[in-house]
Amino acid sequence: MIYILLLIGFTFFGFFAYNVVVEPIYAFVFRKPMYVHFYPFPKKLSLKQLNILHTQFEFYKKLSSKEKVYFEHRVAVFLKKYPFFGKEGMVITEEVKVLIAATAIMLTFGMRSYLFTVIDKIIVFPDIYYSSMNDNYHKGEFNPRMKAIVFSWKHFMEGYEISNDNLNLGLHEFSHVLHFEGLKKNDTSATIFAVTYNEIIEQVKHPPNYKKLIESDYFRIYAYTNEFEFIAVILEHFFETPSQFKSEFPQLFEKVKVMINFTEVV
Image (cartoon, rainbow, N blue to C red; front, top):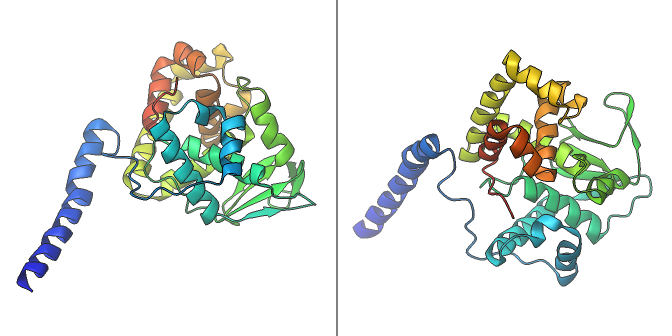
């Protein structure tokens, strides 16, 4: 009996030391979690769901075999956690669910905590819709009061029709969710996100840097609406035109990589 108690005690101490001492120090020094993926029994997608990823999601197709298993597991968990609701006649198909889930997983693939607590549902309209939150028509939005992310399916799909126009509704709205999540939570990935985000904003506010950003005309003017829109827009650019981003603003590009712990997929 005493050995069992000692084992439980050592296990508890090890877990406590890891979470409170070891990983925080590691994250502080290296700006990344000690590990990202660990799934002893990875969940599987159906053949139909896999086919959607194989034929319609470029990011997934570029992953290694091992990374594809991780990606599929995360998509499966995401689909199980969040219900989808179609509005104004929108039919929720496997394509709708898989592509929306894959977009969220792509954005958070370098982060250990990839599920969001600030949303609990996904709402999809067939086209542009009226939002009572701000009395206006929208293509998509993150509504923290409703704990919902909302898309016009037409405009969500348009975000993938041209892969390098830096306009991706899914990435943009999930970036808002990630931003909100990163500022509310205190796990390792969220802490790294929040710290690096603050560094990015400080750099951008520096007058010479801000002037260079504006004059480059690389980021669309909407990016400068506020800090939330700036992060959402630069994440769109990060995924859609990474080579140009890296060439024009190498320091900012590296900061974004650290913020979401992203490893470039060739």
